[in-house]
Amino acid sequence: MLKVCKFGGTSMANADAIRQVKKIIESDDSRRYIVVSAPGKRNKSDVKVTDALYACHEELLKTGSCKKSFAVIRERFTEIVKELGLTLDIEKVLDQTEKDIDTEKSVDFTASRGEYLSAVVTADYLGYKFMDALEMIRFDSHGKLNEDYTDDKVSIKLAPVERAVIPGFYGKDFQGKVKTFSRGGSDITGSIIARGVKADIYENWTDVSGFLVCDPRIVENAKPIKQITYKELRELSYMGAQVLHSEAIFPVMKGRIPINIRNTFSPEDAGTMIVPNEMYDTSAENVITGIAGKKNFTVLLIEKSLMNSEVGFIRRVLSVLEHYDLCVEHLPSGIDTLSVVISSEQLKGGVLSDLVNEIRESVSPDYIHVIENISLIATVGHGMARRAGTAAKLFTALKDAGINVRMIDQGSSELNIIIGVANEDYEKCIRAIYGAFVK
Ligand code: ASP
Image 1 (spheres, rainbow, N blue to C red):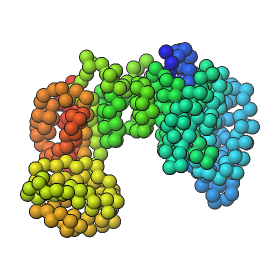
Image 2: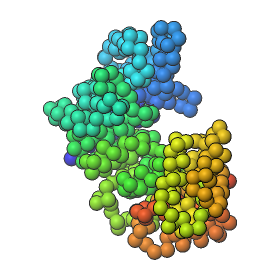
Image 3: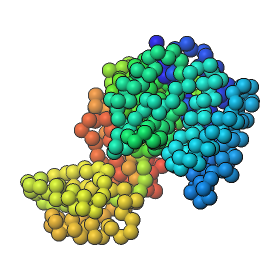
Image 4: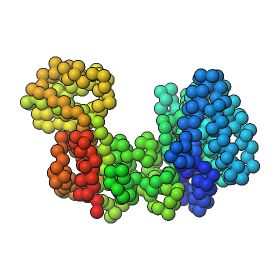
């Protein structure tokens, strides 16, 4: 058994948390490759080391040095090293890091130093080898992860190393410079390492015991999700369920490696297992796995009799949207209707009326209706396809709650049912669906 474990910012925030991390690692011999984030917040009003590093870069741009802002970084790491009782000469490492930031003058380099320092300290504390992500993770000239190169490098570099700590969040660009992933990207690093070493499981240790069926701010004591497939998770994270970086799924998906979300501060909890279809335990299946949603969409409802028999109709509508550089979120259609769902954010600055006029000119519809302030809510469930009556149950619950459904989109994979409701019905709608399906 081989496990790759990633510990997030809260798990690295101070010496107490890092002691807890060590306990977790040492309680299971198969936890051999450890990916770490930069120290996060110690309390609500604290700053994350990564944010403090972005401030260093700002200062550097203005004054030519990051000296003042770097004091925050210095203090965080000296305190951790002192409290852990390490003999590591952290002052020397910090002096060098400050110098490097001033000479590199790159925002990605600066931001990456949180994970770098975190990994140097953790490796020393665990007695594991420090392995820099720069030697393994490579981006191409378009800024995309160079997957095959990276996968090979990880496997070659780590094969002779029994136990290692690897900094999350960054790799090397095609010119050899440090490049970071987007925020929260250490989750991706963990996934890359898990794939490269062909781990049996990727454990992602955070400060919650996995995903919940829905947002606990909407449903108090929302139940945890015990198992979920990669695809279901994609649907939920696209709609806003956050715990794991949405791109972290891809490397492990290629390697068919399950992810287990665990809580550093409650390690006895089983957490959420994210698995490929073939590992899904259908005996423990629920009809629905999760409910997630997002507010603020605009729907253009386009009607035209015999739209279906008009060749190129949808293409012409989409060309207009392309002309305005707009992404389409959903495109549910009926016999004579087509709904175009766009995030309202994209329509700021008066684009909407020009867009509607151009669609009118382009396809001469009988009618276009603009519905604003719409929330989309996805009810996701791997088991929905095999059960009759799921949709009926959902819509009955909404009818009973007095919610007017403005749009319905059931994907052909039958993995989810997406509905559009008025923004003010958003919370009520999630509660009604939860109440109908979760016992
Ligand atoms: N430290 C980085 C951030 O705050 C990356 C991470 O923690 O995953 O976004």
